[in-house]
Image (tube, rainbow, N blue to C red; front, side):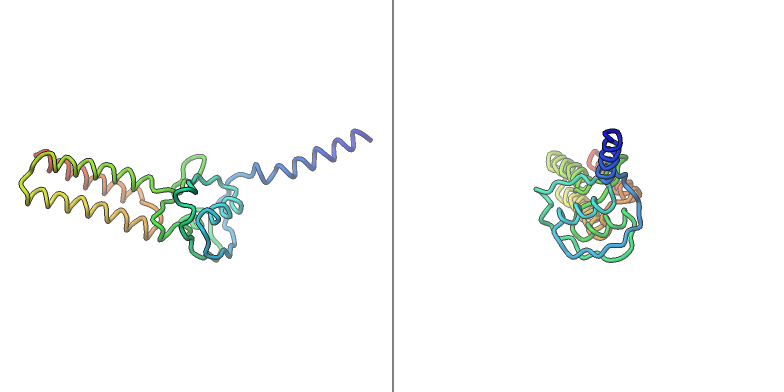
Amino acid sequence: MRYLLALVLSSAGLLVAAPAAAACTSGPFTVDWPAQRMDERLQALAHTTGCFVRFDPARFGALPAPRLRGRLATQALLVHSVRGTGLEANRTRNAWHVDRAQQDRFGQRIASLSRTIDARHLPPHRAAMLHRDLRRVRQAIADEVRTQGFLSAAERAGHTRALDAAAARIAR
């Protein structure tokens, strides 16, 4: 009798533990989520898909996530959830990340190049042209993230080339 009871209890423990250890699945999932706070949305998404989502609720939790309805794969759920917010959805091997990391990296490089322009005491028209080019890159990145919810590899490469070209023009 004890053996049977132990077997039943251990089986019940496995059933309870199964959802907590669920692997990230790609879906598709049928959802009908209302417009809500971003922290609530990402929690619902993690619960539905079994995917771990890294996110800073103190910085971005209060941002609004739009209503989302339909049958979508995990990636589409994330991208549609962050689209229009200025946040990026990116996948690494172990988790999804929702943040502004790529925009921050490009922003740091743009700020550094801008300081270099000012420190070099370039002719005013040349400095103005270089600053304008840097603002265009920054604006393009912000627009792409807002529209898409991510930066593609091709877009990242293009912006890197544009900043490399600006750096070369500054050095001349």
